[in-house]
Image 1 (cartoon, helix red, strand yellow):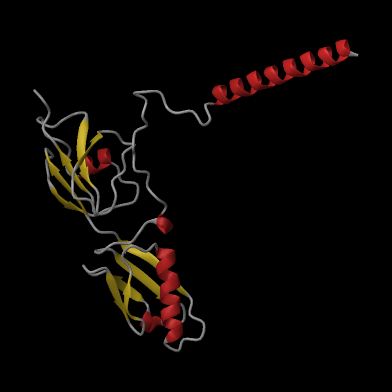
Image 2 (cartoon, one colour):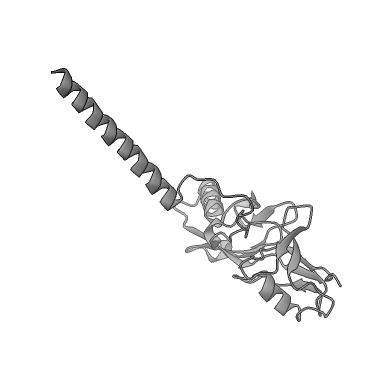
Length: 203
């Protein structure tokens, strides 16, 4: 009896250890829940949100459509304080909202102004511009377009000068106060309102 008990315990213990070992190996092989090794930090590319999730800001021009109400529809620009003024709806906060959130806000505004069942859509007619400065052929202000990255932004500005850095670029995102260094890589997006500066290369 004691022999059978001891044998059973040994078998169970062996199975438990083998199970733990197998589980650990599978986690390691998949790389799940493991910290990245030193020096392997991922590049912060600042992934671009889809248009419906991008936050509106001052300077954006919006195309507002109220179905069946042509007099209430049109293009309106968000003013420097972050508000947009529309017929009947009045002055509405737009900066910081997504277009879906603004659609919901305007729907409620129009409902309170005696429209029975307003159907409102908001699209961005044009985003605020970007600025490309530093060692480029044509520094200045340029219209933002979807899918813009640091390489295409420099091309829009006529390309870089012979003094320009070939590996890095400085970007000040809209709402930030400082320029931050990024690799000169097409994986780095340019967002509406960004300031892109190309520094001189080290000789």
